[in-house]
Image 1 (cartoon, rainbow, N blue to C red):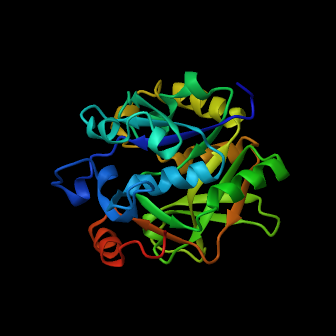
Image 2: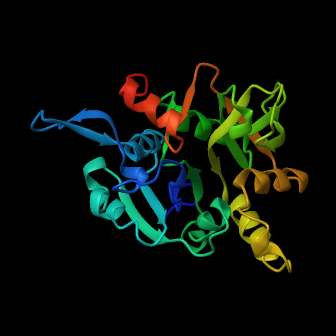
Length: 263
């Protein structure tokens, strides 16, 4: 396979504690509806399908879900992905210390590939967001490109400081307040960052008190990479939207909206 192949990675290791109990994995929560292309039958569309479709629009053909043990309803629902014109595989997460470790479980499968990252409980616009961040990576040859969305809730997001040319200066994880306008929500990166992430985590777990320090945000690892000299670009979507159904208020909003603004 070509070195320029793009692999989608979808971390699905969360326990949905903020919206529990649920009768299914939150990644399969029905949000909105779709029409069957052959029968014209209308049926529910699950939240993570929106992400898969946007990845596919960006040229992604192969995707890995990285699952917490017990989330077997996800592979049961999506199968091999053929009904979405995708090839979907499934990996089981290892160390339970946050998204970086979940993503690193795929290291041997994606070490020489471009990676597209998205979160399966998120609804976002524009639909061509992955198209645009992939184009920016090719244009700028950045090691990482972040897709940015406006937010007025910095305490829930990784806020991004970037210059007029799009170069990211800093990522500030969940500040109580911020003068910054944009958070990052999707990303694409080249093998250089995949290797950096892998090596950084190997070093991190050797710290004596590591297991007591809580989960590591992926934005923090990207920030360490910036300090180490990695080139990180931002593609801002000024009119974009970003809705996390993993919180009760946003789940209510998504259901009420029927996702009318993300189809």
